[in-house]
Amino acid sequence: MLIGYARVSTQDQNPEMQHDALTAAGCEKIFTEKASGAQRDRPQLQAALEYMRAGDTLVVWKLDRLARSLKQLIETVELMEQQQIGFRSLTEAIDTTSPGGKLVFHIFAALAEFERGIIRERTQAGLAAARARGRTGGRPPALSDEDMTAARALLSDPDITMEQVARRIGVSPSTLYRHFPGGRSAVNA
Image (cartoon, rainbow, N blue to C red; front, top):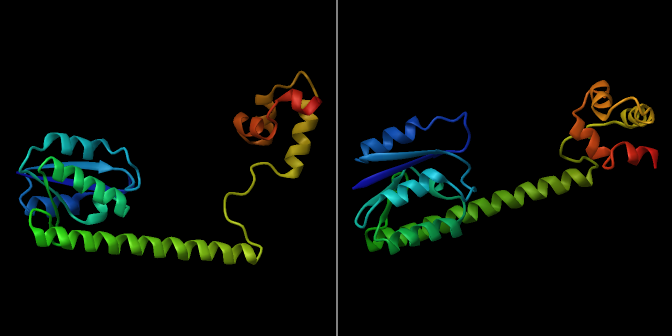
C-alpha cells in the first residue's frame, strides 16, 4: 500500500499541490502536517509510520518534506527499513525499495545537506559583514532610556502598580518585569 505524507512549513501554506501529486502517484491514504521540517515532533508523520505495515511505502512529494537534515532523513528512512517499509520521493524519483533507489537516495540526501550548509554559511557571513559595518539584527529594545526613566519615576510611587506603569508606557507587564526583574523592589533598591 502507498501512504502519502504531505507537509507545509507554515499555517499560511497550502498542501493541495502535494496532495494532487500523491494522489496521482496512487497513495491510498495521505497524512498532512503543518510544521517546520526542522521540528522533530511531527504527530502526522508519526501517525503515518504507525499506520503502515511491512511492505507498505511512504511517499512524499519531495525529500525536504520528510526531513531537513541528512541525519534526520537517514534516521527516518533507516527506521522505515527496519520495519520493512519503503520510501519514495516523487520529485527526485527515489524509491528505496530497489538497490539503485537506495544509492540515489543517499546521494541526493548528501547534496541536500550540502546545500543547506552553504546557505547557512552565506547567512552567517552576511550577518558578520553587517555587524562589521555597525548594523545589528534583531528586534529593537522594547523600552527606550526615556521609558526606563519614566518607569522608575512611576514605580517610586507605591500607589501605582506595575500593571498601571506598563499600561502608561505602552508595554506589557511581562516586558516591564523583564527590564525590572525584582519589580518595584528593584527600583527602590
